Length: 158
Image (cartoon, rainbow, N blue to C red):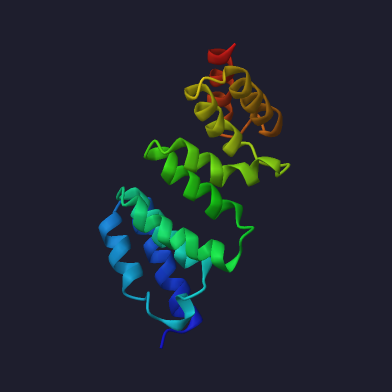
């Protein structure tokens, strides 16, 4: 049976492997402890596993783990965002919108607005795309790494 200390140690190893783009190694590290009781409802573990599967472009499997997170906490905005992102990456734009819509009302969100603007433009709604990107711009700190992309996106929509 895995104790809390060893669990955290294993997560750190997997995170380092993931950050080093060693996706197969991270997957093996996480799968070695998947059947432990401590991992069953642990959103960090499930999120890491879904990140590995997304990085390997195994989006359906990634979504399975993200949906488990939402079954634990339906208000987990990160899991909801990531599910939408897997659909976005597969060009399932309506499904991405479905998962992202509830996040748009979160007063601090700007990343979802950024990506949502691409969907609105692709679906022929440029005014809504501009509205989304302006909201993202207003909510994002100017020193955030995505801020320049938001500014560039705004310029492309005007």
